[in-house]
Image (tube, rainbow, N blue to C red; front, side, top):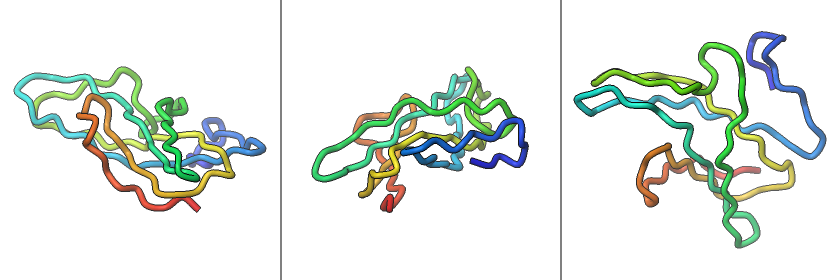
Amino acid sequence: MSTGNQFADLKKEEGNQYLVLNTTFKNTDDESRMIMDGEVLINYNGKEYLFDKSETVMLEGWGLMLDQINPLTSKTTNLVYKIPSEITGPAYYRPGRSNSDDLIVIGNIQ
């Protein structure tokens, strides 16, 4: 997976693919808050799979490393999730620290 920096790129792995989500977090509270990656849910063959571990990319603009944001400020980053190449179906993103029913439709993984 190309990040624009050959030293930070993730190597292709047999049987896996990378799902990249460009995500903006906004702190609407009145004090600073730590932001968390969240999780991807994919419905595959009638079963829901939860991918809650994002890949570590050591490059600005990629991932969250114990990041905090001040009140009323935003941060945009790319989150990367490793998923099996065989998986297809509707996919959803649940931001970290959100309610269990707070899902954002990503689309269909094909």
